[in-house]
Image 1 (tube, rainbow, N blue to C red):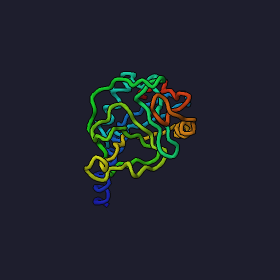
Image 2 (cartoon, one colour; image 1 turned 120 degrees about the horizontal axis):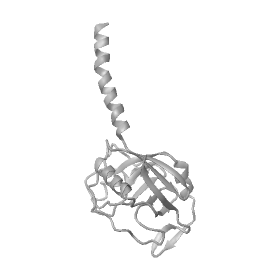
Image 3 (cartoon, rainbow, N blue to C red; image 1 turned 90 degrees about the horizontal axis):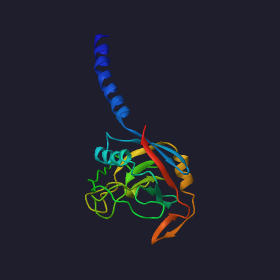
Image 4 (cartoon, one colour; image 1 turned 180 degrees about the vertical axis):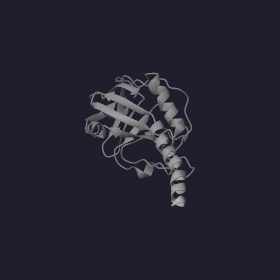
Amino acid sequence: MRKTLLSLLLTIPLLMSSLSMAQDNPIVVMETSKGTIKIELWADKAPISVENFLRYTDNDFFNGMVFHRVIPGFMVQGGGFDPDMVQKSTYDAIKNEASASVPNDRGTLAMARTNVVDSATAQFFVNLVDNDFLNHTDETARGFGYAVFGEVIEGMDVMDAIATVETGTTKGFQNVPTEPVIITSAKRQ
């Protein structure tokens, strides 16, 4: 009985620590022209990416931006352009935190980047399906993957609705919604 009680007492702090970690993850509410999205940012899994995303959020960077790349059955990307497809200046690029233990599953947010591993700035995307081919597999530019840093916890139906909008080519960019899908605001909860 004493051993069981002692074992239980030793386990409680570990459980509380795990719960505390999850509760410490920031929540961002993103209002869009298609509805509201609530995002949990995984500071415990991708601290650099979360700090970066919050810096843009806290400085109202995303307000008035659009989801500029929509590919059904793949992803919805935003954070880079205004409704006229003019790219906004960003802070410096961050280190890519892609990890095989944090996959690009449906509903997760990941940092968009170029072919350069550490090139992510403000652009992010929401995975509409499990995109295993975007996961970290090795240290090469192709295998490094895309850093997942959060998850849509409410409003995935909004993301699915965005995925159905008509798209075309605008100013040389493909898969651009013909009617802009605007991020009207993004704020910490």
